[in-house]
Length: 58
Image (cartoon, rainbow, N blue to C red; front, side, top):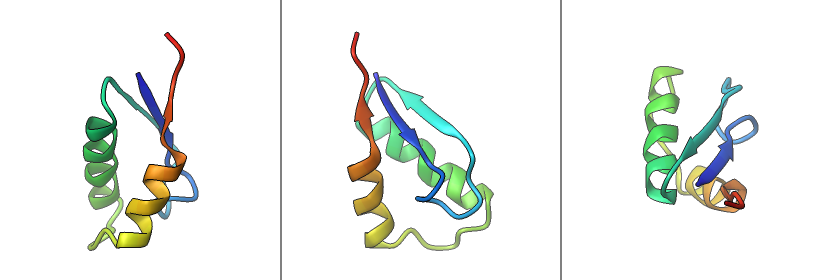
């Protein structure tokens, strides 16, 4: 299980996103960003998502 606290990554986001894979966390984060009005996901945002995504212990 992977987790991303999207506050500080996506403007206006207060959610904790969890999913079984890192790719699914990123997909959900992009959907969340678009819902919050972020028109473009920048390379810097993607780098920050990668840095802040944690693998949770089983």
